[in-house]
Image (cartoon, rainbow, N blue to C red; front, side, top):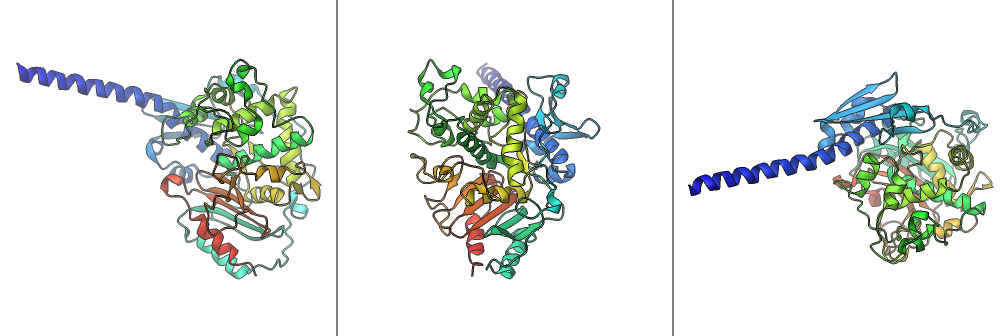
Length: 451
């Protein structure tokens, strides 16, 4: 009798465990299939990559590698399946790729990107930095050593990473450029969190136009009746809003839910409660960036003006007319994660900040903006400024303290070394979950090429 009770007790516990696991797994399915569909769709229709290459590299981890993905070239979509879960992502010109979340495919496809975003120039017939005709002059850097570094990085997978593209700009001139065979100078590469730094630039442009005061409370109606009413744009941009947030990418967390399950990412992040007083605690949050993206959208009287703003006031002005900053189903740009641009575009963006916000002789960012950007967020221990990473905490010991950077979690980097007049771009698949790339060693070797 006792044995039977034990047996049935074990069966009940086992059944409960199976049910609990099934419930949890069910909650993961939109994240698993959403990640696969969204990223594969963008890589195919924005980056012109082969699906099998993306699946073998970018999607070859955790449960994601077990998804079954179908690319529909006629309707420009990707549908991903895993167990009983399914997600679909749609490509639309101008908007990039959007997961179907909280909106029908029919309604999503009704949206049309506004006209009037053409740059007014052809990059292939004008000179760098706006165009692609490179000057090819000697800047006083050892190009033989630099090309050897490029070969090791790209061909030999040195520095513990898998780099797809590599660009070095010295004294405003590209002095090294290399790609793995399946990529080239026209390939758009995913930014991941480097997109946050582009949001910084867009805020800066609005500050220059007198439309934004980053030190004032956001004025969000959703926050007006509680302690969140005191949060400023500056707090959000320095990752010191005090909002509760979980940025764990390897789990069912705030960031994975936001990116793969939500139709309105800004509002999802906005709904988080306060965990600390604003300005007192540093915690990295993609949600904070998408709140800023939402706030930027509110500065325009209509969405057409909102969409063309990024093209006409930033991308076209820095020689990146083909850059695409994707939108969520609600239509807000996903400033936390989803920018697609060429390696040269990212280098040009770095050059904008190296030159104190001036590009090709035109001031894009307000005077003092780069100084503000590189001012340490008070609780960050020297590692963060305003949507840019800093080296004032000497996280890269072989690199000058005044270096600042844009970083993406899968091995996307723009390093800006103002004293050395260097911009270094590394793009690829070197996720931090696998140890990441030895960027300290890479930058140390690049600095060794300066004469």
